[in-house]
Amino acid sequence: NYIKINQLEFTGDFLVSLWFETNVRVWSANPEENYSDFLGLFGGWHNGDDESVPLVKAKGFSLATAKGLLHMNYSNNSGTAFTSSKTYNDGGWHHLVVERKQNNFRILLDNQKINISSSPSSSSQDFSNAYAIGNWSLTNQRGFGGKIDDVRIYNRALSEAEVATLYGLEKPKSTLDAGLVAYYPFNGNANDESGNGNDGEVNGAVLAEDRFGTPNNTY
Image (tube, rainbow, N blue to C red; front, side, top):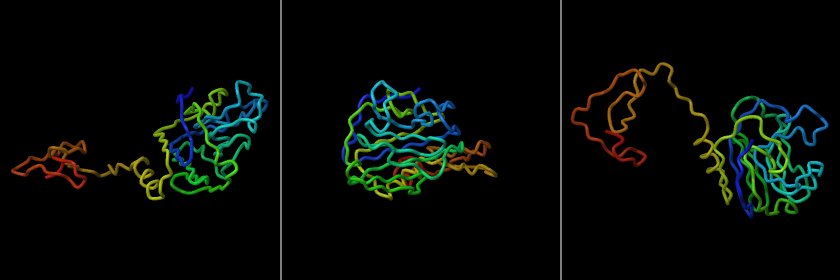
């Protein structure tokens, strides 16, 4: 099971950002299965309809986990370009960013850089394929055994500050609800949104623009 994107062009600089959660180790317990370890996160890796064609003869750009390790594949004939040293099939949510800038790849997990590889002979390759979210290929069924969320694809590189902002924007939020008696966000009224029913009563206060520029969202 996967989501197909009919056409994406990875030319020049680009960035792929996504969140994933899994506790699965391998796609198939059968070691005779070709690339049985791979669980595709995002893929446009093409080797035709024949799964016996080795991965190193394929072409495209794909992200996957295998035995909990993160894998990235790119170029026309080079096979696996990167494998992480740490496993990420711990059942928790992780933020993955893969970026190519001036033919150099940058990979971040949970806003921490884990690899930079410079290989102009292969990383300068451009790809224009159909892609799958939740698989590493449209022809080989290596679906991801977990959840994927908030997939973003940019046709440019992002600065370190932008990547950090993106991580902060999308990471799971702490609600800090323990011990909360009342919460007044002033969303056009003085209602208590803590769920405790301690609504306020407006006496002459006038709604105004808040610190984010949203009208009628503060007093």
